[in-house]
Length: 226
Ligand code: DC
Image (tube, rainbow, N blue to C red):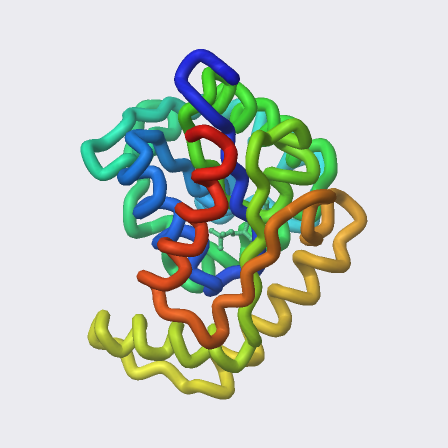
């Protein structure tokens, strides 16, 4: 085991509850939690801010190399991320930032740069890292690997509910189309496509609530001496 405990990876499509589950489980274990989409979202934000074309691999790579990431563990387990010393906050969670993130994350070389940052953040263990390729590429030697899935329709319903709670008035069909588009791109890209890691524990959350998934994950992890 690493100095601070296990490395636990949670991969899967957007909207399966990976972040809520990972954060809650990390709190129970006294571990840190990192949502690695944040790094891709930060890169996307900088791409947008500097008027870089998301399709321009060389420019995206150059940008990725310039970014300095630092993390501060919060009382709720989350590793709060700063980019060049700045907390980017809600800007990273706009629907549009997610879509550009999905585009910039197709570039292999830029992925390698961000992957290295993620490895540094998790090197000492005691961490749950959530993303698309944590168990397959970032930490192929993770102690426990979890892969979460749910139907696109169920995820669209959850997203619509979440947006309504934020006072927005989303269109279900539009959200469903965006989810399917992003799934397709994330799982068909040449560089580190989304797929379950070998030996991953696969959990379908379509018919489970958050508490049930958290309980299931904690039960699985208990066999690994966390
Ligand atoms: O999980 P998220 O929605 O914050 O991720 C945003 C995008 O970043 C997602 O569409 C794909 C990409 N991503 C990735 O390629 N690899 C990761 N480990 C995490 C995110």
